[in-house]
Amino acid sequence: MSATAGEQALDELDARLLLLLSDEPRLGVLECSRRLGVARGTVQARMDRMTRRGILRGFPPELDLAAVGYGLTAFAVLEIAQGRRASVAEQLSAIDEVCEVHATTGQGDLFVRMVARSNDDLQRVIDRVVAVEGVRRTSTAIALSTPVPPRVRPLLERMAQGR
Image 1 (spheres, rainbow, N blue to C red):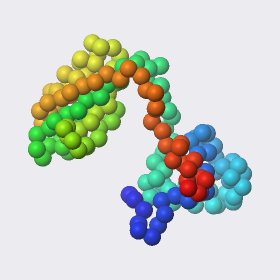
Image 2: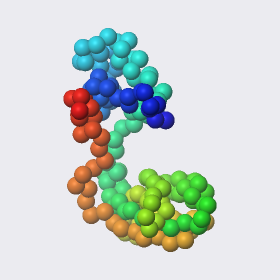
Image 3: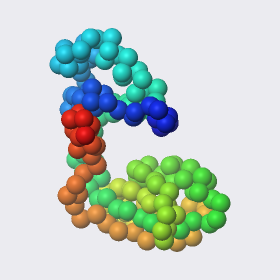
Image 4: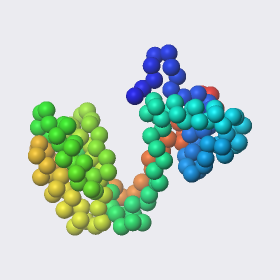
């Protein structure tokens, strides 16, 4: 869900609240209000509004997949049969090691992030991806490192400063 034409996505207080929750996701509403210097009801109303609008989707823990045994990350570009995107995405979501799937423009149709325990395990995962009905061709690359991990902090900091 996106903001309507006259509705700003986030203001400075929203951004400061999200930064606080990003740093300490287990903070309660009362503690957030204390740290932000606003009323508890203000924090609760803003969290409710951001949840309703789909901006704030939850508080899952951030996991280091390598620390739990999935030290190999790979990306695959999939070319799929015309009109099969939803079906292919549904089948890919049944593969536990598939972490993300994005519909894309360019050479491929879907961009897939997957994890594995080893090169042999990655081959097993790729074999499952290739076996998905509707997948025509794949091209896979192994990530050697992640110099810039997934992040939203710089955007929130800019919004918190009113820029």
